[in-house]
Image 1 (spheres, rainbow, N blue to C red):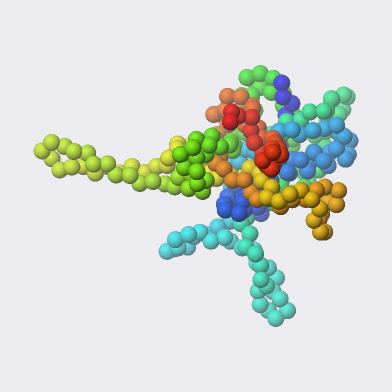
Image 2 (cartoon, rainbow, N blue to C red):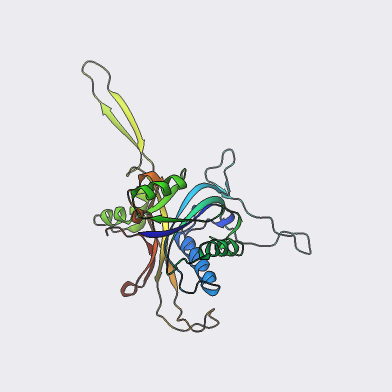
Length: 297
């Protein structure tokens, strides 16, 4: 049985849509798990020192990516913010940042919390208060519905949870596609693009006594809403101390993003809760710091 807290319909403005150095779109899973971990730390510092949020998932109800494509344009452009003018009246230099406005619901598994007396209401109220002081995926939280507690102890409870999340899409990891394809094609970027490109194919259908018919089909390599996702980082330097590092008590290392494939699925597709939830995972032998799901490798 899993104990869950659901935070419905969180409206977020100006979330970070630059999910990796190569992609923009839905915020990276590292951002969502990081936000939930920040919420846990704030609750630990208050009245719940033993509370842990080991796993979570995010259900996206709506997303508005801040891009624009004018008439005759070939590609989309990022809609930037208007910064204040300088003393001379000119525009200051700035770095373009991909942003999005979105509405999501968070499903968070919790443990280390035994309810006694009015602790149930105290837990809900503490979450409500702390969310007003948090950012999620780098964006400002504008509003959200009251958090709810759920116990996923049987199929009926899971069906109730899925109805609560509808209509939405949950992101799942599809590294299995990358792993299988890279057995034949070791180039990771090429493998990634093969699953994202829309391919137009023609087929000649011959008819006796008639002119041949050309049939066109349009589609991708794999069915489903397949997207590139950032799921963590890989260290590219040795652990050590760095000048002016933020935390002097923690070893520092440079890292690069880990990008793989994911798929958006509506909640009714899931048969069990484990298919939805994400968690942290470290593989120190390969210098990997990942967000992943409990799925077969």
